[in-house]
Length: 345
Ligand code: SF4
Ligand code: SF4
Image (tube, rainbow, N blue to C red):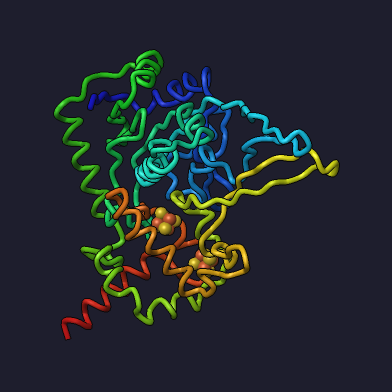
């Protein structure tokens, strides 16, 4: 990995250089919260945001998109070619970069890549930035507090300057043209070490660090805990909407009034929706809240790990705030902590 250092005062020039060639998406203030939006000026960007309401996911996997149009009379499908906007998503935290990396495994790097996702992702540059954990963050417990891949640049604030990790040639050239990057000195490396330690010390110590969560999920699959958790679920699907790694979708055909032309659309869906597992004939494989909430938690903390050797939950904490019923992976970690205490009795 190549490292350079730039002064904080050079960031506006870097953003301006990106804006010359790309649409720049960055965190901005949205009411009392923060959101990723297209920006027209560096001054709109808030870099010391705690977390955004939703993640950058919508820029690679939109909530609704047309897959193709069809002509039912002629029995023809027209290829749908969407214009892909070259983008830079600027100021992305490590958890959200890891989330994009997981989405890549599913949609781009899989045996059968999704052409819609892959086209958008390949046209998207990612500039990461270091963060200070908020109360609901637990990325360090799911191995997502550091982004090792998946970015073009990563900016680590080391006090009045940034240690920049360079992940792509294209981004390196833009950095070189817009700023005066210099080699990192020993003093910079020490400042980086201090910044990393400060960050590690600021995670919420009340969130339990549980080892072997996937194994515990299997061991406690039938515990009444899931009944209690599922019984509280309101089926609002807010958790999936805000989650940077929820990727379930539905496919729908919509006909024009002429009954001939139509289009096929993909929309976000959620496994916490009561209709999600309904199949032809009306049977619902996950008819109650217990099964739905348990399924979501298992996919986040167990199933994806088995398939891809990484947690699907990146510990961003968004569902911790979004769920009005107080359901989140933290509750699952606390349950295992209580179980550990029970075993010790
Ligand atoms: S499950 Fe919750 S904490 Fe984990 S990645 Fe999704 S929104 Fe973030
Ligand atoms: S777990 Fe919470 S946020 Fe998710 S559907 Fe249930 S009530 Fe809504």
